[in-house]
Amino acid sequence: MIVKSTWTPMIADAYANKYGEVAQDFLSLVVIPSLAALEQKGVEIAAQEDQVLAAFHLHDHRHLITKTSMALCLGIQSLWEQQLRDYLCNCPKAGGITWKVIRKASWGFSPKAPTLNELFSEIRGLPIEGFESYRRLDKLQLLGNVCRHGAGDSADKLQARYPELWPQVMVEAIQTGSSLLTSLPLGAIQITVDLLRDLVNAVVLFWLDMRIACTEALIPNNAAMIEEVARLRAKRELLL
Image (cartoon, rainbow, N blue to C red; front, side):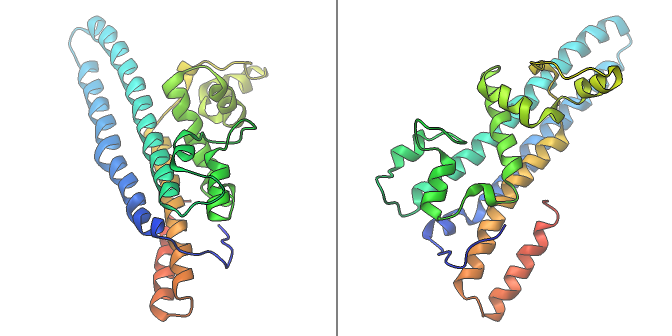
């Protein structure tokens, strides 16, 4: 991410200092253990002596894993969106922007009302689309909305922008030489642990880049600050 030299740290940046760590804790303490426990339960079900009964039980269990993965994805998206709203609410605002406007704003772009993207740009002076994490954050927002509401505008945008979320459908299309379906089945979305980890990493990367920008702007020529920026930049490599 390239941050303009006139970037000015705000009290909101101090409040957001631990946002990335909160997201990481949600991943390591909630997401991964929950799905690991469900996978282990699936192994136990598959090992039952009555294989016919186990097959029916395993079908229901796989459905539970899918629904749990969707719920955890929605949890990540809600956490990120709340962090972003809180950040903007803690920033000094002008031009008629109030906390109510921020709370009601949606993600993306709309001719009808200010969006979070536009508010971030107006309040902080740079486009959120300029962050390296943006594409993955956009995927998180759309996927979270699909997990919450199902078919709709977000599902259409998700399919158009990120068809890789339907890997099996894509493989079948390649094998048969056919095009992707006009409307991909929502039940075929693959929400894996690796995907959830990548989405959390995008949240962490966004707040890390914010922290780097603020640290660089505080005392640019201070040796301790230069060393801290180098340390923070080293952490970025694992998140890209």
